[in-house]
Length: 100
Image 1 (cartoon, rainbow, N blue to C red):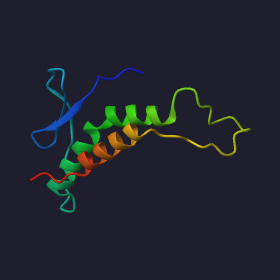
Image 2: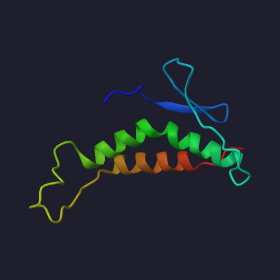
Image 3: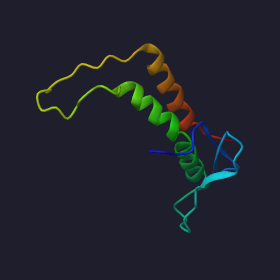
Image 4: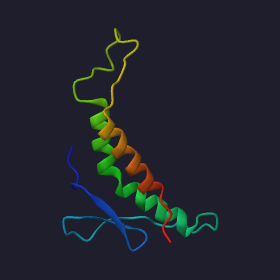
C-alpha cells in the first residue's frame, strides 16, 4: 500500500495538504444542503488530515505480529505503552478541536 507520506494538515478551511511541499492533496466538498455547516466541513478536513497519524497509531497499538484471526485466540490482553496512549489523546484532541 502506498500513499502520500504524512504528516498532512488542513489549510484554507477545507483543503488538505501534505507537509512535503505539495499543493492540495484532497478537498472536502460541501454538499448543497442546509444541514451541513462550514464547521462540519472543517471538522471533516481535520479528520482526513489525521489519517496517516491514525494509521501509525493503530499499527503501534495492534503491532505487526499479532494474529487476531487465529481461532485459538479467544481473549487477548493488549498492553499499550504510555507514550502511545498520550499520542492518541493528543491526536484525538486535535481532530476534535474547534477552529475559530
